[in-house]
Image (cartoon, rainbow, N blue to C red; front, top):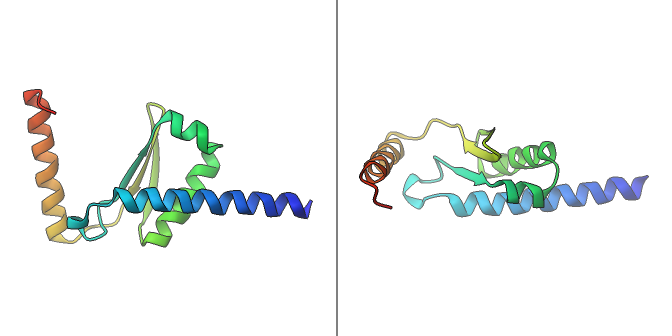
Length: 110
């Protein structure tokens, strides 16, 4: 029984480390650590294991990064988001980037 608990703990820690690395890589330097988001596809989720365990690991990885982490499952994808209020400059940059992306999508430019 103790060996199973140890194995589960190791699996969890490995998943936390993997998610933390993915979340860190997804950060944009200009946002100074804010506005973090990671989107895991259905294939990613299937590879990583049980949804409940993935969400728990994502919240722990987020804490390590200083995030206030929320997760949302939509359309078979898991969105892992930093829900902190970013500083004004990061908020402005993110809003500008979103507006530009919407303009490109409307024009059909990728």
